[in-house]
Length: 505
Length: 104
Image 1: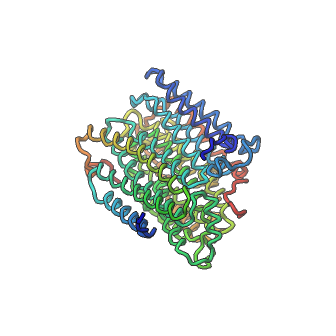
Image 2 (image 1 turned 90 degrees about the vertical axis):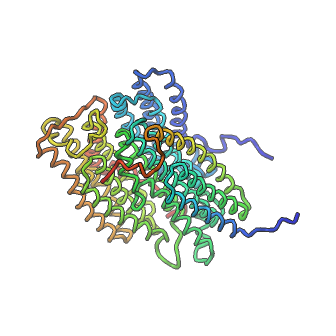
Image 3 (image 1 turned 60 degrees about the vertical axis):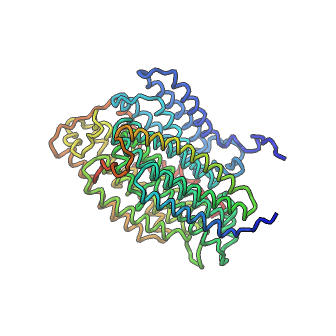
């Protein structure tokens, strides 16, 4: 007969940070109803408090100060609260906090002060946190939807604006299209292994090793379809077509958040499924996982196309969209390196360090776009930054830091991220991929430094509006970018204990 | 009863056909609602595969996933139809060929 489950058996305490945020999101949604439109900054404040509390809760176990529940596994292995998920939590919560900071003024001057903005943003954050802790394909699917559906709504938040609606529609149709690939992939992997639990999948693949069974074809098809589904989310070429249009049309405060959060979520899912669940899926005595070649090609294509198309862009948001595609390529290098046995943990560490550096750098760059955009959402042409060096020297300096970090110049966080990624690539025998990475980084210097050139060496109006919270968000991002660049061991220490392996390597 | 056994491969084949039909619909149709219906077809193709595999393995995991997929699909419908309605209000059309504001 059916037994009433006892929550204590499910190690529910291990899920504390994400549960706190999920509950406070629901409460925030209700409380917001009683906050009048002209005081929506109160909702923002409440959202920031919820995020701050969750961030503290999430960071404590990262520094081994406290441990929730007994052991990492909760809900019968479907939720894995390990170091990997702690680090994902920290990255996405910082992004969400910055996202809440830049929102109130932006929404006010765009006349979009609707409180559900913050609840939706928090829901997406909950989705990414669940993705980081996914121990089951069902959780991967649910968290992907939980992080995507609020983002569809947020991209169309500027109701009545054709651009915002168009971007939401494109994002929605392609996002739903890609998640159907993910579901079919999950079905095929389940068909091959008889389970949706990642650890059990790992064990089944291990037992199947070397056997000539039809299961391997199902696994191959299933793995590819999962890669397609999540590849859309992280904007890997050839699944990137939506990115520039969505980034250009959606409200900039949303883009700043989603360009980072969706990437964290997508890569957390890819790492969980491929590096934790299927690293031992090897064909015919090969030394590396069967999916490595595919990821290799995706990474190379993404880096090359993203960086080259970015050169011809004349709109700041579009330029940053192609830049974010290119950066997905660099993280894919780390994913590919995880396909060699014994390098999974190093690859996960490198990817997380890269993402952590990317949080501050990319968010900061978009925050500067918010500042120069003024009251007109279409004012995001490259020319808007002309002369910024004279009129707003601090803003221009911050933008310079972000651009240098996106190129990967030493003493910025971006360099540290690339350093770890290229290092693990070379160690895992992917030197050609690392070389492509270095060359495309050089190419990227051209368009990033053009922004710097426009700011300092060309005459222009250099208008920008900088309310206090936005200035703080830009300041924190610039500080984080420099801090991790100068003191890289802060990041590598944090990631030290990250391990995805079920079978001890 | 005399219900004939249908081989698992046939169910999976049918689901693959439905999935491809759905994908074709997404790529060829120009009406947002029809594209959306095609996406639902793809999701249901996956559901059929999950149910078939669940029967083959004799455990409930696959059927469990089906319930989650159906729930999430319902949530997607709510958001998607709302988006389609707002787009229709602004443009008086839901033909996706009219969505071409952005250019490189």
